[in-house]
Image: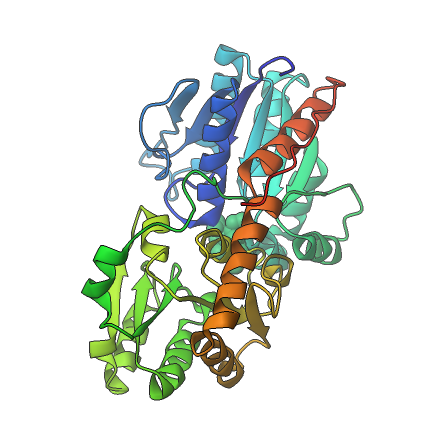
Length: 388
Ligand code: GMT
């Protein structure tokens, strides 16, 4: 390895795929010998057990009585600066543009130009927040003033350019899963707790915000269940969940649905499923579809945003127009009732996850970006991930 780096990582630590990806990346970089400093408002929820080379710095927000709104952004910028000085950080890698790219810019101004800033765009920081006129210029400024910018799909790069009229390079770095964690687990002893023999299990995992279209999940499930007995496992929590529960009750489907709430060992939970449902309105990547793919579970979903870059329609899942729940249910039934086709999809899922989205490949891509912004010339060879 070239010189080990000292990297500050900031993300939203308590929810969402961007926090998961940032935390997993930090853990993998630490394993490779880099020194990782998480600078976040609470311990990232996937950080797990104590690990060499990982440090955590809590952002404490000053809540003085004159402040109507405690200034999280300023506390974060100040903490970034302090950690950068004290630990002699080489760079800050911030996940999610708002406000993290701006805070990092401020910290860089305070610390000196030596400190580099890498910003990773994850989706709604652009597709939702950059549409807000009160934030648009600020987001553009944060992106323009980062030393490197990455985005999790080609579609997100396109949308960033369109919405913000930005021409600067944005590097495509797909999300990834750690192949040592995401693989088909043997859950045969648990399956009976959720489904009768012969019943299929459909699963949806999300933060149940309107953008996930969880109502469509229920529609798809109801149509599938009319033709073949099935169970629906809902994982996660969020604002739309009460509405979804009411809909499920009204349709007389409560006995077929299990609410698992927030779960940590996602690979274990996903391994219970026959299909993952992801009918989102917007999805710049769709990390849960990758997690499912790595566990050999095909996705039925919408062709929104970056999902088609991940889920190959007709090979590792089926994608339909947003809201076309009839077609999604038909596709689900096609897979659930044809064992040979299902086995082909499952194999294709495992191969694609391990070759295209494996942790070694994407981590090396990030390292290359770090060395480039720091002017350390050597390019790391990108590992070729092996098919199973
Ligand atoms: O969905 C969000 O608003 C949160 C955000 C997050 O922090 O997880 O999700 C985005 O980032 C994920 C990780 O890169 C992507 O897998 C999601 O597709 C993306 N969400 C949307 O684009 C809606």
